Length: 176
Image (tube, rainbow, N blue to C red; front, side, top):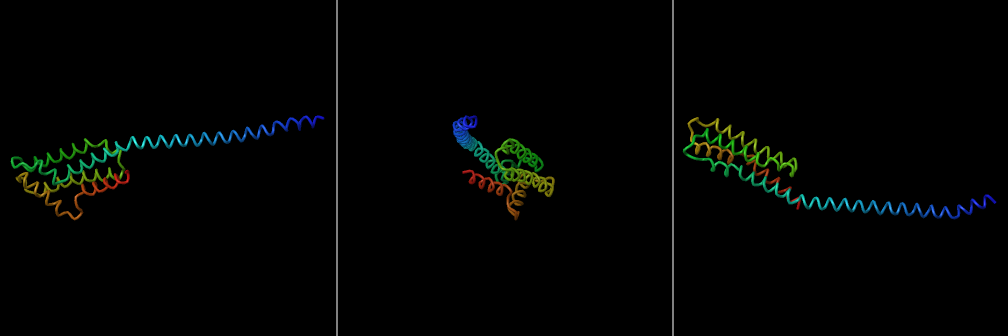
């Protein structure tokens, strides 16, 4: 008799347990899928919100590279009334200020692009000093500017700004 009672109880409990377990795993799967969908949606929205900020950073760095392009930078400070030393100091100050003004943009671009920007700045500062040291002390700013431009025109490696701009363009195309 006791075995019959136990079997009778099991007859009701086992199907209930099976239904409970099936429901549990089904609901668990639904909630996990829903959670994944929410996460993907948040990532998508976050990416869409960040994209304009990142594009703006790339634009600003492209403008920086254009402004620091030797044939754009040198004419701004080439004044026959100032010495080559004064022009050198003005160029160094301008390059550093332009770079520092855009320092925060490194957050939004790849490490490779930022390294190219830094290399361009450092290369330009190095050659501003090297070319100045290679000309006579009493040279005019016009002569100094001409020598700087000639150096970049003859440089087989090209202008570093151009390489950085190419990297910026490539990354922007990958974003879009």
